[in-house]
Length: 213
Image 1: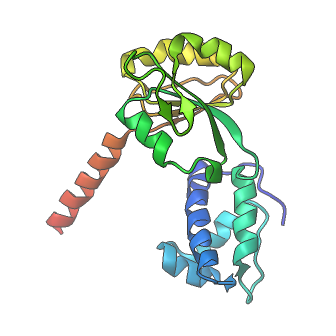
Image 2 (image 1 turned 120 degrees about the vertical axis):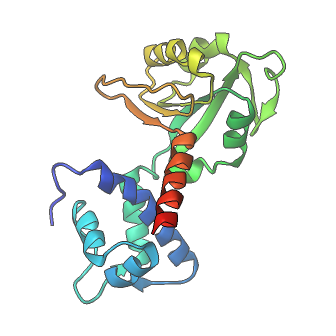
């Protein structure tokens, strides 16, 4: 089956979840799984799983199911896990430090190459084996090792000018925790705006709705 020409973001956003579940299955020695069994574990319908995977050509056989290891590798390839993107992190405060220290970047297609901050108390410190550099060295560092991705853990008011500087050195993707909504629509520029507060409020809404039932 041929790959679909246009794949919705809702399907794309489910792919990492498939990847996680398949990893766990693989680690637990599961060799083969049907769409029905996978649906029961993931809380999706079997039809939804088949439709999602068929967007990328389909990987199972009717009546036989999916080979877990093969499907895991295929989805990893679709997500770009087999090619690391050089990445810089802006902001080495509490959030930036936590992300740098605890995120398994390499297993998610990312290679962290530099960390920047403008605080004299932080510059020069070692985080994840990298020395925090002053933000004034951003352009020089990016010329030496051009990054494809930037992680923003900086104050909202600092983000607009930093984003412009990063675009100027060729950054193509932003993982943005700054609470500044990057809305660039330039060709090739991809943005993931992460608002943890929005997620928490969504949880609050669902709790409130459940109490009324």
